[in-house]
Image 1 (cartoon, rainbow, N blue to C red):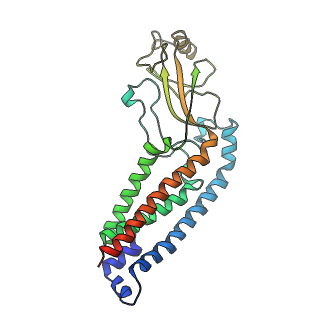
Image 2: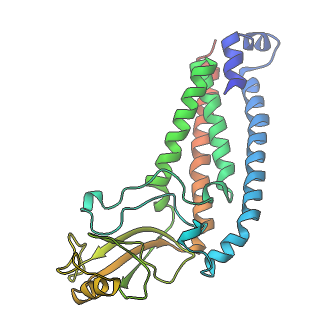
Image 3: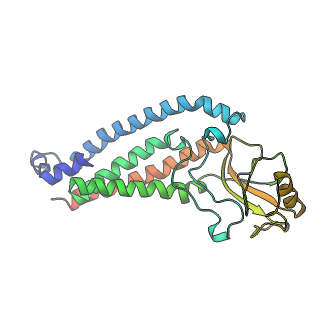
Length: 272
């Protein structure tokens, strides 16, 4: 964070400390004022985006939005699972970009801002060089924003799992060697994983005989149903949105508090 790193790099912090201002007061003043401004700005952005997206939420919830317009439910997770018959170790390859506007909605963005700000100040105090501290802050924050959606967020609220049969009128992505994105009548939920099950109810490692040679969707579906294949879908219910928001905000605020404690300790014990 340039606010602190620049002072440390230039040495002007010593002048402040020699005028009777304690190290802790010097640091907390900067943390409190600038941190509140950053959180307030994030809150206003989140409020504006939520207001703008409200009609989209209503359209998605009533089934009025389809894959062609790229609108997704607000609960939709920032993941891109590889669904279908991939080997167990590769069955879920998560993506890195949020498919919707969920990342800048709700209360979580306020916690993102608090974490990013305290992270920047802490690295500025430790590195004491403006540009290296800024680069380290960007790299660390980006890493955390990838790790949380990929491995943490899905465990912050209980998911629901259903099994859907294949039918000609059920929209799905019927590829040559897999099936994915099976519609199951809940457009407002956020799907976190899909797996194609074989006739024994276990994850399929191949498609049934005749599937690769089918000439129409009806024939492909007939091949799957005659072999007893089904699709297992795991999703976050729409009413989990605020549960996930509060839980994720708690994770980022805990990280911010931990970094803040480290920053105060480093300022009092290691800075000179």
